[in-house]
Structure formats: C-alpha cells, structure tokens
Image 1 (cartoon, helix red, strand yellow):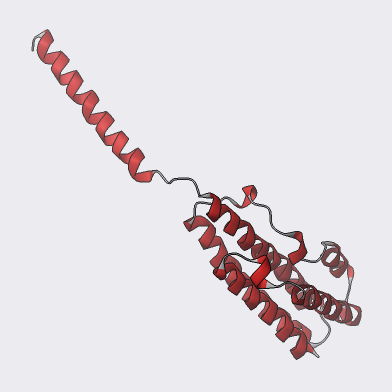
Image 2 (image 1 turned 60 degrees about the horizontal axis):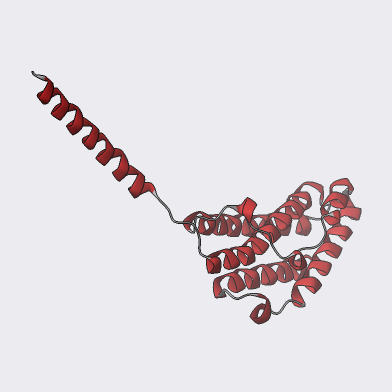
Length: 174
C-alpha cells in the first residue's frame, strides 16, 4: 500500500471510531433536570426524609418495644416507609436528580433528637416514648396543608399516605 492508501485507511478508522463513540455518548446523555423538576424534587425529598426517620423509629419499635402491638405495628410502619422510600428513590433516578443536591422542608419532620432518645429506651419506657413520638408527628403533619405546601400532586399524595399511615398506626397501638 502506498502513502495515500494508508492515509485513507487511517482517516476511515478515525471517522469510524468517532462515529461509534460519539453515538454512544449521545445515546447515554441525559439532560439535567428542569427547575420545575428540581422544585418538585425538593418536595419529594421532604417525604423521602420523613420515610427515613419513620424507618429508624419503626426499627427501634421492633427491637426495643415491650408490647406486641408496638413491635407489630412498628414492623408494619417500617415496611410501609421502606416501600414508599424505594418508590421515591426510583422517581429521583428517573428524573436524573441527586439526593445530595436537594434540600427538603424541615417542617415535615420532627427533630432528630427523638430518634437518638429512642435508641436509649427499653421496654415500657420505650413504648410510651414511641407513642409520644407518633402523637407529636401526627400533630405536626396535621398542621401542614398539602394544597399550600406541595405544588406537585404526586408529592402531596405521597405525603398524605405517610400522614394516614402514622395516624393509623398510632390508633392501632392504643
């Protein structure tokens, strides 16, 4: 092969490689989320954080609770929060949002002190404290108007499910 044929072969290979890798880059490209999706993401993250807090409290109820009711409904609350958390996590992935980049509304959860205090309680003392936590959380969630606080209907629906679950579990525990 002469020089001209070598140059044509090299040029062909370069164009072929650029086409293949450029095509792969375009296929895998995901645009960043819009401002509206980010705003909705902040609302959804608030519910996601609430689910994390509920899961922690529910695990303590299962491990530290004295009564069968507290342990049973703690387990139910944990299952509910875990399933909802996974559903919300899938929503974040689908919309190309990173959890670290979002801030959630602090008024949707109670302070972290509740969870730390629960870790030190055992048996009857824990049961009373868990009931107090659910009462305080129910009261806090009841003050939030979903029509005012949430723009996205899906986020409002998820929040309403959490509110109903917390209230229902508290009633069932007695």
